[in-house]
Length: 117
Image (cartoon, rainbow, N blue to C red; front, side, top):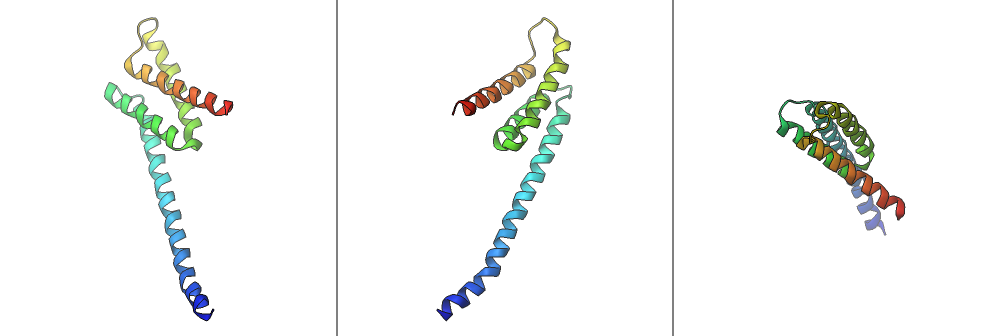
Protein backbone atom coordinates (compact mmCIF):
# COMPACT_ATOMS: atom_id res chain seq x y z
CA UNK A 1 0.00 0.00 0.00
CA UNK A 2 2.83 2.39 0.85
CA UNK A 3 4.53 1.52 -2.45
CA UNK A 4 1.38 2.35 -4.40
CA UNK A 5 1.04 5.69 -2.60
CA UNK A 6 4.67 6.56 -3.35
CA UNK A 7 4.27 5.55 -6.99
CA UNK A 8 1.14 7.68 -7.27
CA UNK A 9 2.93 10.62 -5.72
CA UNK A 10 5.73 10.26 -8.22
CA UNK A 11 3.38 9.92 -11.21
CA UNK A 12 1.06 12.80 -10.35
CA UNK A 13 3.45 15.60 -11.43
CA UNK A 14 4.38 13.69 -14.58
CA UNK A 15 0.72 13.26 -15.48
CA UNK A 16 0.12 16.95 -14.87
CA UNK A 17 3.08 17.82 -17.09
CA UNK A 18 1.80 15.52 -19.85
CA UNK A 19 -1.61 17.20 -19.67
CA UNK A 20 0.03 20.60 -19.90
CA UNK A 21 2.06 19.52 -22.94
CA UNK A 22 -1.10 18.26 -24.63
CA UNK A 23 -2.84 21.58 -23.95
CA UNK A 24 0.10 23.50 -25.39
CA UNK A 25 0.12 21.29 -28.47
CA UNK A 26 -3.59 21.91 -29.01
CA UNK A 27 -3.10 25.67 -28.63
CA UNK A 28 -0.26 25.58 -31.17
CA UNK A 29 -2.44 23.60 -33.57
CA UNK A 30 -5.29 26.10 -33.21
CA UNK A 31 -2.91 29.01 -33.80
CA UNK A 32 -1.64 27.31 -36.94
CA UNK A 33 -5.18 26.73 -38.23
CA UNK A 34 -6.10 30.34 -37.49
CA UNK A 35 -3.09 31.48 -39.50
CA UNK A 36 -4.08 29.17 -42.37
CA UNK A 37 -7.64 30.55 -42.27
CA UNK A 38 -6.42 34.15 -42.36
CA UNK A 39 -3.97 33.47 -45.16
CA UNK A 40 -6.59 31.60 -47.22
CA UNK A 41 -9.10 34.40 -46.69
CA UNK A 42 -6.60 36.86 -48.13
CA UNK A 43 -5.76 34.59 -51.04
CA UNK A 44 -9.38 34.36 -52.20
CA UNK A 45 -8.93 37.72 -53.90
CA UNK A 46 -5.66 36.84 -55.63
CA UNK A 47 -5.45 37.32 -59.39
CA UNK A 48 -4.02 33.84 -59.99
CA UNK A 49 -6.55 31.03 -60.29
CA UNK A 50 -4.30 28.42 -58.67
CA UNK A 51 -3.88 30.60 -55.56
CA UNK A 52 -7.64 31.09 -55.25
CA UNK A 53 -8.27 27.36 -55.71
CA UNK A 54 -5.69 26.47 -53.08
CA UNK A 55 -7.34 28.91 -50.67
CA UNK A 56 -10.75 27.35 -51.31
CA UNK A 57 -9.41 23.84 -50.70
CA UNK A 58 -7.65 24.91 -47.50
CA UNK A 59 -10.86 26.51 -46.24
CA UNK A 60 -12.80 23.35 -47.17
CA UNK A 61 -10.44 21.23 -45.06
CA UNK A 62 -10.53 23.67 -42.15
CA UNK A 63 -14.32 23.58 -42.17
CA UNK A 64 -14.29 19.79 -42.27
CA UNK A 65 -11.62 19.24 -39.61
CA UNK A 66 -12.69 21.99 -37.20
CA UNK A 67 -16.48 22.04 -36.80
CA UNK A 68 -16.34 25.21 -34.70
CA UNK A 69 -14.79 27.02 -37.69
CA UNK A 70 -17.22 25.59 -40.24
CA UNK A 71 -19.65 28.53 -39.91
CA UNK A 72 -16.99 31.22 -40.48
CA UNK A 73 -15.65 29.26 -43.47
CA UNK A 74 -19.17 28.90 -44.87
CA UNK A 75 -19.88 32.63 -44.43
CA UNK A 76 -16.55 33.65 -45.96
CA UNK A 77 -17.12 31.46 -49.02
CA UNK A 78 -20.67 32.77 -49.42
CA UNK A 79 -19.39 36.36 -49.35
CA UNK A 80 -16.71 35.48 -51.89
CA UNK A 81 -19.31 33.87 -54.14
CA UNK A 82 -21.59 36.92 -53.96
CA UNK A 83 -18.68 39.18 -54.89
CA UNK A 84 -17.55 37.01 -57.81
CA UNK A 85 -21.06 36.54 -59.21
CA UNK A 86 -21.14 40.03 -60.68
CA UNK A 87 -17.88 39.47 -62.57
CA UNK A 88 -19.03 36.68 -64.86
CA UNK A 89 -22.71 37.61 -65.17
CA UNK A 90 -24.44 35.12 -67.51
CA UNK A 91 -21.37 33.28 -68.78
CA UNK A 92 -20.08 30.00 -67.38
CA UNK A 93 -18.70 30.46 -63.84
CA UNK A 94 -14.94 30.14 -63.45
CA UNK A 95 -13.38 27.04 -61.91
CA UNK A 96 -12.81 28.68 -58.54
CA UNK A 97 -16.46 29.72 -58.30
CA UNK A 98 -17.47 26.14 -59.12
CA UNK A 99 -15.15 24.94 -56.33
CA UNK A 100 -16.81 27.32 -53.88
CA UNK A 101 -20.26 26.13 -54.94
CA UNK A 102 -19.19 22.50 -54.50
CA UNK A 103 -17.78 23.27 -51.04
CA UNK A 104 -21.01 24.99 -50.02
CA UNK A 105 -23.06 22.08 -51.35
CA UNK A 106 -20.96 19.64 -49.36
CA UNK A 107 -21.56 21.70 -46.22
CA UNK A 108 -25.30 21.90 -46.82
CA UNK A 109 -25.46 18.14 -47.47
CA UNK A 110 -23.53 17.48 -44.27
CA UNK A 111 -25.88 19.76 -42.32
CA UNK A 112 -28.92 18.00 -43.80
CA UNK A 113 -27.50 14.58 -42.94
CA UNK A 114 -26.76 15.55 -39.34
CA UNK A 115 -30.23 17.06 -38.82
CA UNK A 116 -31.89 13.87 -40.08
CA UNK A 117 -29.96 11.70 -37.65
